[in-house]
Length: 162
Image (cartoon, rainbow, N blue to C red; front, side, top):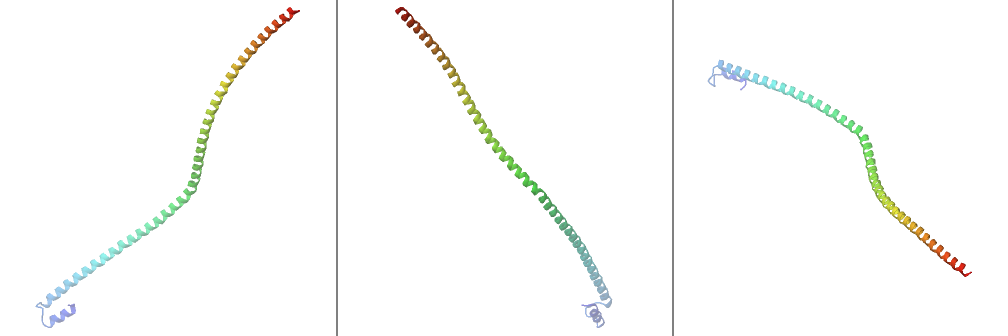
């Protein structure tokens, strides 16, 4: 029932068993309670809007910070990218040089081993040659002595025949 209707009903002859004064007090209590409820609802709504504004503001700051950090990250990637390529190329060249050096070192060791073996064989053959030359010299000397002896004998025989 509204306030106007309850006043009319009270003057028309107390149908609900209350006095007009009690009805006015009930209505006043009811109005105060509704007014307090509305005030609390309005306060809650204001606080809700304040919190919502703060959240929106922080979200805005977070979005702005995210954009800034993303831009900084992109700049870092751009700055780092050329260096990575150069470093990668240099590393590849170093790896290739290491492989070449390893291969050359193996080849060098193999050739050194072959050289040592060849030098040893050469020295052996040289010793053998020296030994053979000395034997030849002895044989030639012996041969010369034998021939000289025979010549002397032939010479004596020819001298005796005369």
